[in-house]
Length: 319
Image (cartoon, rainbow, N blue to C red; front, top):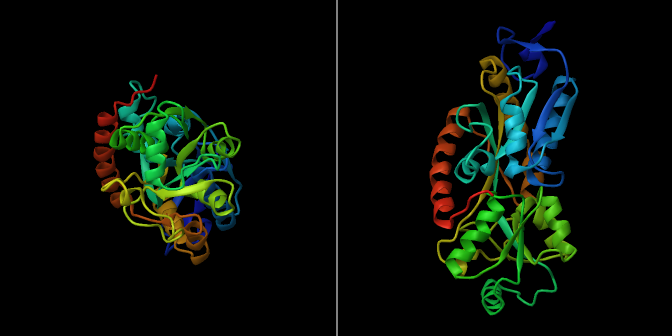
């Protein structure tokens, strides 16, 4: 049985009751395709909290991890397009994986309705405190003197963390070994515990532990310094032109009714433009970046071209 909600009432965002949509009864599930503690998980929980407050209906976050976010993305791609199953996707799931995996269990361009870009952020190059390098030039010199002895962690093959490191290796002529994990939180635990030497992890996961002194920050991967950590240099200050930033977006399965998408677009913009939410994200190095579906679609087209070139030049393919 299906129940009709007034979107104006349910989301308190549409301008008139004439904007009505049919929604099946039941809780909303927001899928994070990476493990708890990472950026996708943080964003999913922010959205879930505010969507539940707005609608009064249960909203849960489900972490479905693996294959560079592909398992969670495929789950949502195959879900019923009724607005009750949503995805916090990433640069990996929607701009990189299709060039890394020979067979992807979803089509990032055809299987989703884009709702909005959520946030953009650099990765932060952080090292275990036992490593003697305190700057990027010192790290390059150390890795060259100790080839194939250092390890770097990522959230999986084809993720922005891995590609940042692969680009670094390519441009510096250094050799390190990749160790994949399931999310940013796991990477940081492994780094603090000495399982890996370093990581180019998402700022949201890495900066709190860098700020507390648990790991040593060396540089951000954006072209400009990040306002959250203005004293941390960019990799580009040592390697001109180096840039490997990350982003996360909000998606519904293809075929979700337009009134539902319109309501979610309005909800997302209202949430991300709240000063407390923007400040919460900025505190961990992320910039809230709401877009219309059309703007987000154009953004992804450009991103796919950029990352396709990086994946090709780095020769990255999933096993």
